[in-house]
Length: 433
Image (cartoon, rainbow, N blue to C red):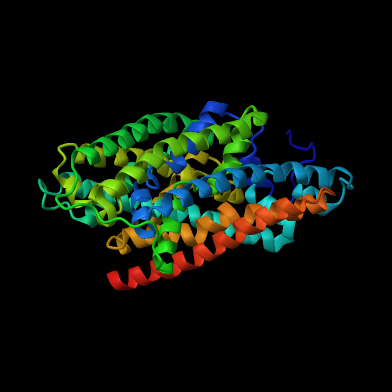
């Protein structure tokens, strides 16, 4: 699918130029690394905990969620083609047409489907999700530093660890586009796979003293909601997909790339869920390496170090779309000394993630659940399905009854799971404070 020839002159034109650069810089493999690195890491460490909340039914939930997430990742990008079909027969001089063409951002899809309200809703959800994930990365990285070095340095408090992590991720200010970030993602992919293998092997070598307690299914709706939120993190990439797609040089490779990457994600995360829950049962913690029995592992600090290294690269990926959108809105690329202005703006993002991370330093698991249920569920499931249904109808190609039923089921289940996940996360935070 090639972008339309019409130039973006609407209020979102600058942001569209960022999302769909004139000279895309990312290869298909680089795009796959960006997708894989975004979803595999922190989310991978939550999967066994998710099973502890839901029971063994969590395996089926995760597989179904993976299939549904892959489907919505595909239809989200197909919306761009539908928008082109809708605009193809319209007057190119119409300001509304010029404002939508070419459509290249998640917000553009929302605007084409539901007008200005759709655009604003998507942008708020998307950027809130990405920034809060950045907060989670900053927080987990800081706590990991305390875990690794705290026994040797009494001065290394959680606040100091989070500050050191913020200083480390600050260097992402020099990575302008997703094409540049892809090189970091390639390294991160190797780190993540190594981490997954290490945790699975060490879990098998360090079982608990008492037999694990497991169940087939939990009947507590709050626990099911918490598990739903944990599983979402294994596939939460949709907010950055339009940016990744826009940076691809060969856009027709997008769908095969996404399918293959999702298979790779399941190949890494599913063993973490099965082994973690089978070995530790309800005692498994979030993240998994905090499980007491794993503390005996001589490779514990290696595991923690690997995920911390992963977070350094993943932080750059999740914040890139939000930072680039704000830079485009402010016209930073057209100012004198754009690099200096970009450094200043992105430093503000780092300071923000640091500040919020310090506030929630004692509430890591519920914070993660809240982020995924509140913002990731809508951007992963609700919005792609609603937009695809609406735009297909506008393009004169309405979905079949079976397709409508499938999309409605995805939206309904995700909405119920998100509500229980939000309530459960808030209750856990209140209990922690």
